[in-house]
Image 1 (tube, one colour):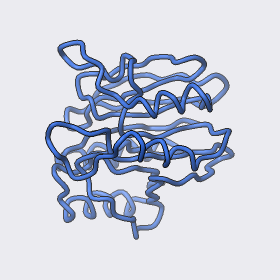
Image 2 (cartoon, one colour):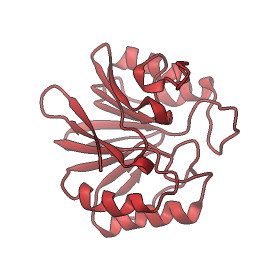
Image 3 (cartoon, helix red, strand yellow):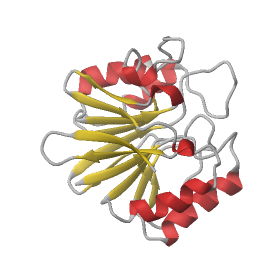
Amino acid sequence: MELLAITDVHGKTQVSKWLTELAKNFDLLVIAGDVTDWGDEEFFKGFYKTLSDNNITTLFVPGNHDPCYESTFPKMLNIHGESTTFNGLIFCGMGGSNPTPFNTPFELRDDQATELLSRFPDRIDVLISHASPYGTKCDRTYRGNHIGSKPVRSFIEKVKPKVVISGHVHEARGIDVLGDTLIVNPGPAMNGFYAIISMNGKPRADLLQV
C-alpha cells in the first residue's frame, strides 16, 4: 500500500488543485494538519469537500491553526484522539501542537497530549501527529532548536509504530528514524511539498515537490 502524505496547507487554494489529481493515484491520502490559517472554517470545509467530491479517501488531524471540526463529508475521517483500521493497518491521530508563543487556536499542554496518546492501542502501524517528535530532524528550526512534542517522542519510544507522519515545523522537512520508527515530515504543501510512503514490507518514504 502507498500513502500520499501532506501537511501545512495554510489556506493556499492552489493546493487542492494539484492534490486532487495526485491523490487519485494512491490508496490513501494522509493530512497531518494545518489546512487552514488561523481557523478559517469556510476554507476547511471547502478543502475537504473538494477531496470528498473526487472520491479520495482521506485520514486527517487538525493542526494548531485548524478548527477541530468533525468531517461530515464521505471518505473524510478526522482521527484526532481516535484509531481506525485501513487495509489492515492501524492508524491513530493527534492534532494540535505543543504550546507556541503565538496562542494559536489548537494547542495541547504536555499532560493533555500524554493523556490523549494513552488512549491508543499498544500496537499501531501509523501515527498521524501534527506535532513532530522532539529531538529529531523533523522538529528542528532554522536556528537549530528542537521544538517538537516530548509526549509524542515518548509514545514512539514506548509503542514503536512503523511510521509517524508529522508537520508543524515548516523548515524541518525531512525523514528520520527513531528506533525502528520511520519519521516523515513532508514539508509544507503550501510550497508544493508532499511525501510518498510505501507500507509494503519495511516502510520507506520519498520527499517530492510538484
